[in-house]
Amino acid sequence: MNHLELRFPVAGSTLPIDHGYALYGAISRLIPLVHQMPALAIDSIKGRPIGPGILALSTPTTLNLRLPEESLPFLQALAERSLDIDGHLIQLAVPHVASLAPAHTLYSPRVTIKGHTNPTVFQDALRRQLDRLAVDAEPIIGHRRIIRISNHQIVGFEVRLENLAEDSSLILQEVGLGGRHKMGCGFFNPLPKPVWPCQS
Image (cartoon, rainbow, N blue to C red):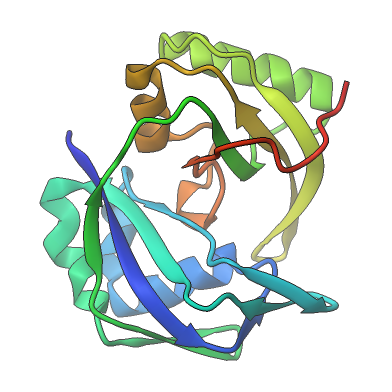
């Protein structure tokens, strides 16, 4: 499948910092078919923390979706729609479609693997996933993250992958790592240089 990225310009002021589950729910209410799209991944919307649990949206910022090319028409229906994300309203504009570009370094602020909450065990599980994808990379684990999914708290970690070959970089951007890709987890973006201290 040829994956593309659908980028919706976002207008709004604030969101919850932990908004992945609520964002997925808001999109699902408008397009119920997303429940039947296993290859869909939804990135978190970028912003700046301004208070306990609150994010001020960056200007400009976008809602980025990764999906197979044949699914584009279904998600383009989000254009010019508003989303209620736990009481925070945002407005989506007409999206731009972009191809994925390889990068030597990829970063995800949150990757979750069910049952793996210890960083060492989590890293070993990531290595096994990379082996199954035939990707040659050593995962570098960053800060522990707590993600709210419904009434549950899920443990995840920041992950950086460096010195990637072109084909490996594209594979990881298409399929991600871990689970909960529709809730902002395991979504890898190119990173020009390290932005956080890694654990030793």
